[in-house]
Length: 224
Image (cartoon, rainbow, N blue to C red):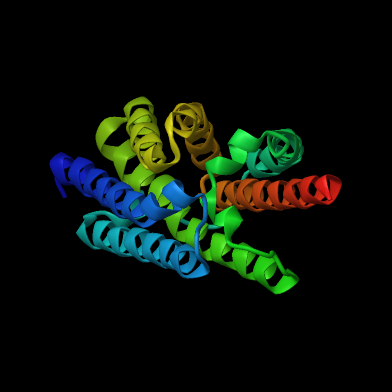
């Protein structure tokens, strides 16, 4: 496996993800409404794309032992990360949910009436999608990059393509994803697994949706 393929495969994957995601969200941005079918397509496409790209990278990898971040976390860093970051994530999302502009970044929240069954489906889809997502970014790509580029350059490269993946959500998400990408890479490296980052990312995504939906319901109730 060459350095060029290590750079090109993840980069092309992210570019394809951005293009297709932007296309699927185009109508939603104009109408501020995302149909359930589009929502499901987004999750299915993202999961499939990152899973396929991960498979290709693993098959091309000469030394499977280098995939250090693909396994069960076995470090106290994992416990510390959960204890420290989960409350921080919940607090930040709780406050962000009060900002109406924040809601516009996530058009899937306008699917319609959020019944309990839809909330469970949303959480399940987030879990599956983010598993493939983090296995790709903080699992395989980071592991292979470290061997060829060194830890510092590998984290920088990973954070850049991670930020590019957020282009469909606007400048705020792109800027915010850069330091978050670095933090996620460091946690994955120190805990020797992408799983802890998957748990944190899942907590971030689901709690953001929950607080935004809850805030939207409360706002509508106050307006009546």
